[in-house]
Amino acid sequence: MVVVAWLSGQTAPTWVENYRGDTRKLTELSQSSDFAWRRLAEVTDTFGPRFSGTEALERAIDWAVAEMKKDGLENVRKEPVMVPKWVRGRESLDLIEPVRQPLAMLGLGNSAGTPAAGIEGEVLVVKDFDELTAKSADAKGRIVLFNAVFTNYGATVVYRRNGPSRAAALGATAVIIRSVGPAGLRTPHTGATVYDEAQPKIPAAAISAEDADRFQRLADRGVRIRMKLSMEAHFEPDAQSYNVVAEWRGRELPDEIVVVGGHFDSWDVGSGASDDAGGCIVTWEALRLMKSLGLRPRRTVRVVLFTNEENGLRGGNAYRDQHAAELKNHIALLESDGGVFDPDGFGFTGPDEARAAVSAIAGLLKGLGASTVAAAGGGADIGPAAEAGKIPMLSHNVKGDYFLIHHTQADTIARITPKQVSDNAAAIAVMAYVLADRGLR
Ligand SMILES: [Zn+2]
Image (tube, rainbow, N blue to C red; front, side):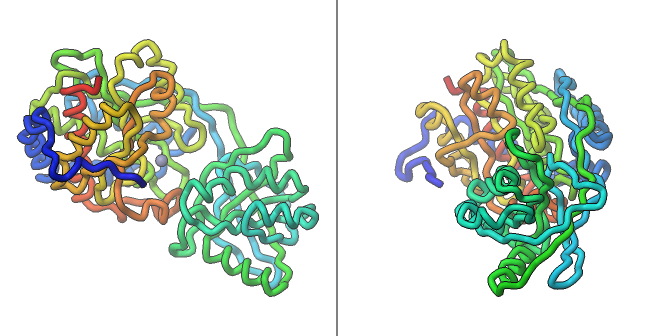
C-alpha cells in the first residue's frame, strides 16, 4: 500500500488548524463512553446474522430507523430495494475415503444444491487454475478441490468466485475450495460464487485451510480421496428490503452531501459484527456525535446503511439510481467495510487537490493513529454512485485480523473492543465533519 502522509516538516494548512478544537471535542465525547459498542452488541445479539431475504435483516432495519429517530437525526427513512433470496438449507460434506469423517464446511453463497442423495465422487486436488488446466483430463466426473493458499483477498477470492464454473467446464461434478482466509481454528468461510451462464451450475462449498492442507498431503502421497457433498441450497423469489438513510443537515449548503456508511446485511453465519454491523455503527455514530455536540457543518452529512452487499449489491445500485439527480451534489462518499479494529486511517480515490485536503484532515487524527491516507479508497456499496457521479471515495482503514473471521461463524463482537469502536467513530466523525464543513471542490 502506498501511503501519502502529510509531509513531515511541512506545516498543515491554516484551515486545518481551525478544526483542532472540534477534533478534540468529537474525540473526547466518543471516548467518554462505550455507547456505540453497546449499540453494536445490541444489534448483533438481538438480530444475529442479517442475511438478505430474512426477517432478521428487516427487523434490524426497523430497529435502526427507530434508534436513529431517538438519536434526533434528520430525514430518517427507508428506501425500498428488492433483494435476492438465497437459502442455504441443510448441508454436509463427508469424507468417505481414506476414512469416514464429517467435515466442517459451508456452502458458497449463490451455489446450486445437490440432488437429495448428494454427490459422491473421487476428489482431484489442485493448487491453482494452472494445475487444473494441466490435469484437465482428470477433472471429468470428479469433485475438484481448489487448494489456493490465502495470500491476500484479491488473489484468492477468484477461486471462490470462478472456481466452480472453471471446473464445471471440464466436467467436474462439484467444487470444494480452501476457504478465502488464513488458517484459524479449522473454520470454513462462506462468500459468493458467480456462475458462468455457459457452464453447468455445479454445487460448491468451502472447507477450512487446515483440512485443505490435509487433503493436499494425502493427494501428494497418492492416497485416493472420496467425498460426499449434500446441499439443499436454492433461490426463492426476490424479497423486499431497504437502505436506511438518515441525515445531519448542513447549516449553509444542505443540498450538498457527504455520505458515510456501511452495509447492514451480512452472511447467514456468525453475527456479521465485523462485516459489517461495525462499519454501520461507527459511521452512524459520527452523526450522533456531531448532533450531541451541536456541531453542524456547512453541508449535510448523510449516513446510509446499505442492504444486500454480500450477495447482490442491490442496495448500492439502488442508491445510485434513486439519487441519480443529486449525485452532482455529493462531495464525497466514505464506506467502512474492513472491520472495526485498531484505526489506521483512510484510503482515497479522487483528484489530487482533494487528496491533499483529505491528507490534511487525516493529519488531525494522529492521536487516534488514523492519519494515513492510502493510495486508493472506496467500497462495494458506494462504488456504483461514485462511478456514476464521478465522486471522490474514501475507505475507512484499520489494522486487524479481518480476514481471519470474515464470513465465518467467528464474526462476532467478541473480537471488537469498546475502545476500537470509540476511536474509529471519532476518526470518521472528524473526517466527515471537516469534509462537510470545508468541502472538497
Ligand atoms: Zn462487507
